[in-house]
Length: 203
Image (cartoon, rainbow, N blue to C red; front, side, top):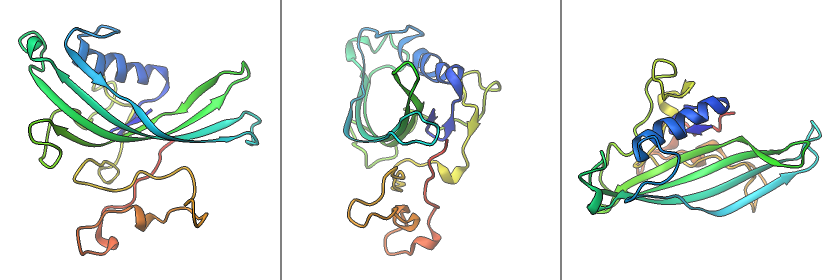
């Protein structure tokens, strides 16, 4: 699982992120919803490619999705929920890999989610907004809910950084992979050479 500059390995790592970090912060440790807290996280515009001729004999698939999340705490629950009254948006991109097991079931092999931007309702996404989902800085077990690895600073991104999340498929017109320099985001009027490097999909 790759998320916001960290990698969470095996089921134990995913549990730390979802039922630990998210579950404790959003729903007080409950494995389910709580009254007045919204976390609507749709996946849209899916592009899925299936490879039945994979070298190990097990079919694999790659999928890219966009997400546009709406989240917040209802005003009626502001005094009860530790986040108080809040409402925000988040946009992001998934680049996932799946594998078909011998039992015929498709399972997630690599889940990679890149939150692209955050914005509160009052100001929109053009202002710096901190605190919704901070980057991890420490790994497990130093951070009991932390990732197994923290990525290099230049592989973390969040608006106003506009680098492109790499594609699992070639350019649909040229048939060639998208060049790294075309996935960078230099300052307006500046060359790509001085910009942060292109993002990489980690295993």
